[in-house]
Structure formats: structure tokens, C-alpha cells
Length: 173
Image (cartoon, rainbow, N blue to C red; front, side, top):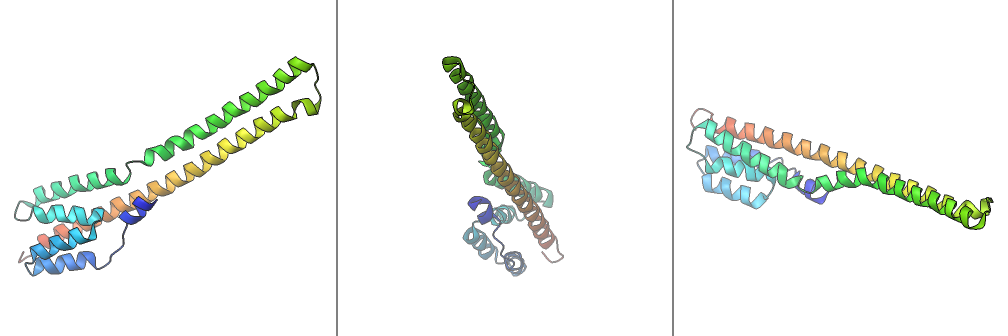
């Protein structure tokens, strides 16, 4: 959550400042601004700046590649959350099975089928199921929220890349 939130840093003046620097021929200032921001969007724009003077297609491809690397970096550990959301209910189910085994073991040892004799096994069974489902649902929810945030970042990178390409393709540049 921290990594994804930081990556979404919302600086509305970033692209206008980059445009102003490029229009004024201050390439080094634009590059410094990108380094100072240290966000995925800034890294992608910096990659584009480093390719200035080359064909637009080459600049675009370099920025697209940088964008893919930034998205991969941001979502690097997201798969663990998906894994937890899938495994937690199964672990809860294992606890459910252990609870049932406990019930039958106690019945087998004592021959007693009273509620008192089986209540501990029922407790283990119900607690394990509830805990596994709760952890799974929470992990699933956060996984999808973070995925939506990463998708939003990808759209912002694409929009910023497009804006950068528009600036370098304006007449007079």
C-alpha cells in the first residue's frame, strides 16, 4: 500500500514544468526535475528526455519499456497478497478437518457423544473456518484495491508519456 500510494504521487505541476523546461531548451533542468521527483512517471519522462533527438518512435518505445519496468517494480510483491487470499481459506479448512478429527477421536476414546465431549472440536472447527475466511476476504479485498491503484498508475504513466510526446512533436521543437 505504501509503495503503490507513493508511486501515485500527484503533482499537477510536474508535466507543465517539464513542458516549460523543454520549450525553453532547459533539458538539464527537466532531467533534474525528474530525478528530484523519484516517481514512476518521472522515471518514464526522464527516459524520454534521455532519448531526445532520436526518432519519435524510438523515444516512445524507450518510454513504454520504462513504464513496463516501473509497473513491474510497483506490483512486485502484490502476488503474495493474492496467494494469502487463496491459501487462508484452505488453511481454515484444514483447521475444520482437525476439529472434526478431534471430535471423533474424543468419541472414540470415551464412547461419549455428549455436547460437552464434542464442544472443543466444534470450537476448533468453527474458529478455524472463520479465521481462514476472514483473512482470505481481507487479503482478497486489499489485493484488488491495490491492483486498481496500479491500473490507475499505468493510465497516468500512459497519459504523461503521451503528453511528453506531444510536447516534443510540437512545431518549433
